[in-house]
Length: 279
Image (cartoon, rainbow, N blue to C red):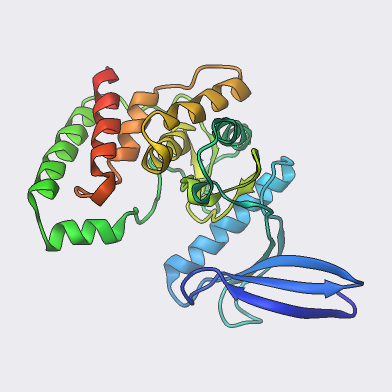
């Protein structure tokens, strides 16, 4: 970028990156996000998967960060990517707005229309937050300091897993999935969704992987009824009913810790509703 000058660099996550970089060129401010994988193999895989997913989104003209460049480590010593910054703020940081939640569902439907075969760049996914899972701090706390609530949660999750295991796995439809579509990874300006960020859990799988995870996130953030707006938005955009949502809501809830703190009652209600409709 000729005659460009970096005017600010801001860490976006507790001193570990990614970093928001602002550059002025020809009197125009440009914003980009720099991500580094670090030295772990998992970090390398995360950025490589993210780059493959962003490439698919750009080809399909789906709103998402655009990959500006990626270095395989030969220039910087670690795998590093530079991508455009999305406008707006995360949905999780904004007050409840059902039009915005409808738009979240609609945007996920756009992502799920992207047809892609699984492979090393975009592996098959069976649940959200693969490969390592999520809610690690909560799971560690539940294991290290068991309480009556965590023991009750353990029993509920175990019973749900047993019930789910007795059913055939739902894989009738598959396409690109984000893999970590909680509301903190979905950006919006007003009621318009500008895209999803953090694509390192992406892959090929059933749309319910994202829908269940997003619905549970909405329930945690705004209350149990907010989950329905996301499903409504997806079905309106897709032009059909979502497939096997009780199954995928259960899958999403099974990724949580036995004790989710203030969110435990919400998780329990979300999961119990899903289990009541499983068949």
